[in-house]
Length: 272
Image 1 (cartoon, rainbow, N blue to C red):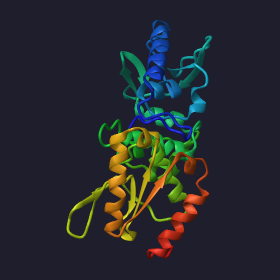
Image 2 (cartoon, one colour):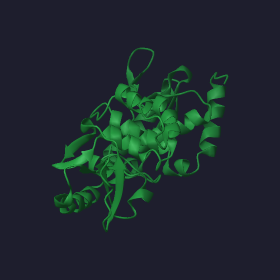
Image 3 (tube, one colour):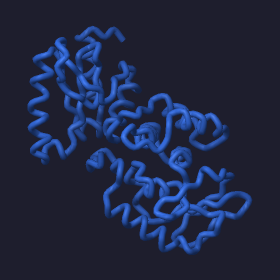
Image 4 (cartoon, rainbow, N blue to C red):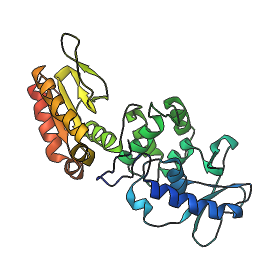
């Protein structure tokens, strides 16, 4: 978690400077909030640390929502919104009124691709620090008839995972699914035939003895991680597994990676 990405997404927790900036901006504006107003959309995502594309961080407009029937805020430096809102959909972050994590996911649907919604949704479900449950996300989507972006939310929902540790892992998993390949398991321990631990890859196809890992820059710059990587691959290969390493370049253009993955799956028994 928190590794700088090269695929256009923010980090799961967000750089410290980014979070400090949005906190300064929101706290400076907060005395102007009425009891019916709260921070939402991109601003709320930044406050919660939800990964969002870098393209949404190019300006410092604050998203301020108000409960209907009040009028949307119109002020310099503010993007105003008006919604029907339930009390439980507004929470406190650093003392600030903010859209709840689930509500933020719904609010971002018109702004994100399905892949980006999956990265954000995986972050909400992440098992180490869940901000939502799959059941609550499903209920919220089903209750969102007529909401902009509903089709994207509906497509993303069944593809979410609580085991994904980073947006690149989420993106790779989605692209595998979109290509019609079998769905991999996410961050599960692998063992050899005698029960000895082999590795815990980002993604794996146990039926076909194939493992996939995303190699961010920290795999190159962190000597401990680098040594672990060097030791892991021979263990997998000795046990009959094939290990595939995916880079930011594969995320920029996944066609070659997906074609290669398809060929290897077929070679190991996948029939499509």
